[in-house]
Length: 188
Image (cartoon, rainbow, N blue to C red):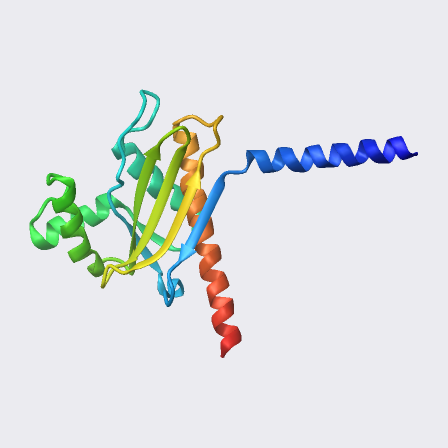
């Protein structure tokens, strides 16, 4: 009887440890005083990214992955292409033709016309790929929310991995907004 209990205990510990080993490491931070419950429309900014291998998606594909992953979100997400086209129509400035710094400045100045907030993705390709999502308030460029997630060491720089990491961002952002909404309703 003792051997069976020990065997079950060991199997249970192995199962728990294997599940923890396959989960992506992540961390989220909400800025003090930030109200993410007011965010109904998020615009996507151009990612800060350089492909590290031949199998890694290009910057344009990553931008599309970030938009396509929003299908798991209830928040309305505006693609980078749509924002760029709207800015071109309204200001006659093609931010896609400008360098990264100039296009980022013009995006920050004009995104308030199209969304409540915007997200900038930064990708670090070290031993493990890390995604850093920064959500800014559109009207004053104030940082509201950050989310960092790392791919597992066995996950490559592929479209599937990048899609999974982006989907996790949208899920966590909405979960944080729901938690903040519950906390705000308890205070009233």
